[in-house]
Image (cartoon, rainbow, N blue to C red):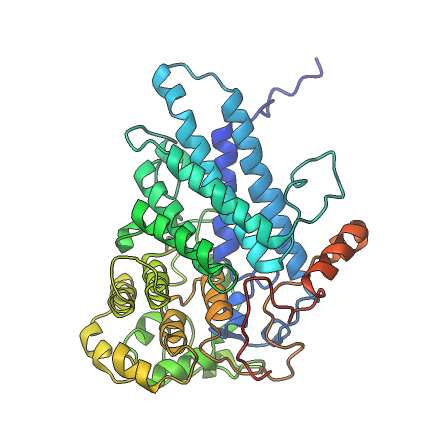
Length: 464
């Protein structure tokens, strides 16, 4: 009597891990206007009718609140509980019990990924007091201190991985099917990105972090991509399919900024990225209503239900290595070789031919592009522009790249609500419910404004 025999009384750590993994992938991949507008902010897409988000309005749809909730509640808390449950579980065989350290290391990698995203997006965040259900008013920790601690945690997780043993079962891990070697490459690639992010604020730590990650082993091909495996049918389909096809809505067209830049170079990847209008690639004016019928849309592949959701990619890694080499770090090649590898990886990923001819264009060839560059240092514009093309449709990755390198130079949207938003403002819920800690954090970072540059973001080249 009074026992619920239909619902589970407890949940396995593996189930919580699988849930957190999907929530993280969905939040990174989704174009849902209430959750993730970074394709609009980086001007890869433009809205057709409702233009608030293209104009950098973060308030109307409570976007900062929604991203905060998704990562803290649906990703980090599930990962935290997954770790606890796995630690407390005694499995039926020694072999299964022997997998526990690898499972814990993998959970730690995704935890670092989520926390690093929060720091890169907001600045100072709840960290040491986060995820405690008995503490409803957690303090905010200094972003740089958090970031350094995350790098230490990631390094420890990498060092603890035993690639001779298994981890999660295939159905519990829809990124790497439990392959520990691939998880280690992903962890090192994430460590590489975090190291590069610190390059303008702590050059010594940046270089040691990057070189350590490279030596331990980062992505070496597109086969290593950290991608979530989606299915052909809802609710396990790619969020692009869910929002742009199954919804029956026509909310987005291609953005004029990226389309015009790629048109100038006659970039062969346009056919993989966009549809045409009367044989032309045409992007909607940023911030302006853009009729769906009159402009290019995303390609069929991008809205395919089973298209993998990329969380981190090989071409991003090669662009990061190119930047590292340009900064004088030792990463097994020079800036040009990694730059070429990055562009080639992008062409290969999208099954586009003609990379040799493209690389030979004066505007693309590393040496001639460097000589013509107007940035300081000159490699910023060269690498930044090509990374912007290569990271198309990757949401947070191009957003981070554009803020770090400040290239390419984006345009001011029609009726812009702010300057280029280099961060999410803090959630309204935090302002109203956790006011004292919010006030302290806002003051510490220099003000809770979209234009407040975070500790790692030292430069800004846009004219708006």
